Image 1 (spheres, rainbow, N blue to C red):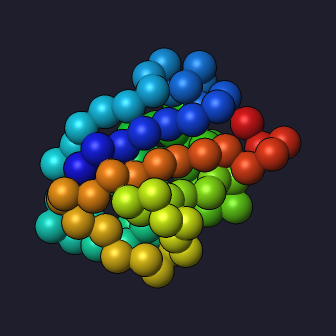
Image 2: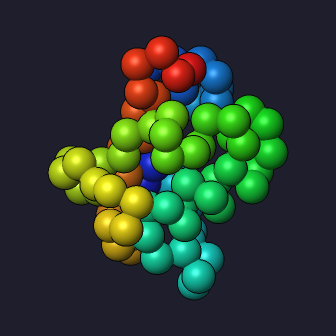
Length: 82
C-alpha cells in the first residue's frame, strides 16, 4: 500500500510518502489509522479520524471504507488540527 501525507503532516511525520505492508487485520480506514497511531508519537496524536481526511484511490473515504494492499491512501490534516 502506498501512503501519501499532505500539508503539515509532511513536516510532522518527516515524510511525504511510504510503502507499507498491511497486517491481515487492517481492513478499513479506521483500522489503518489506528495501526498508524500505534507507532507512537507523533503518529498517535495525528492519525485519528477527527484530525484527518483520508482518500482511497483518490476518492474521499469514511472510517468504514475498505482498504487493500494495492490501494493508494492519501492522508490530509483537517484545517486547524495539525
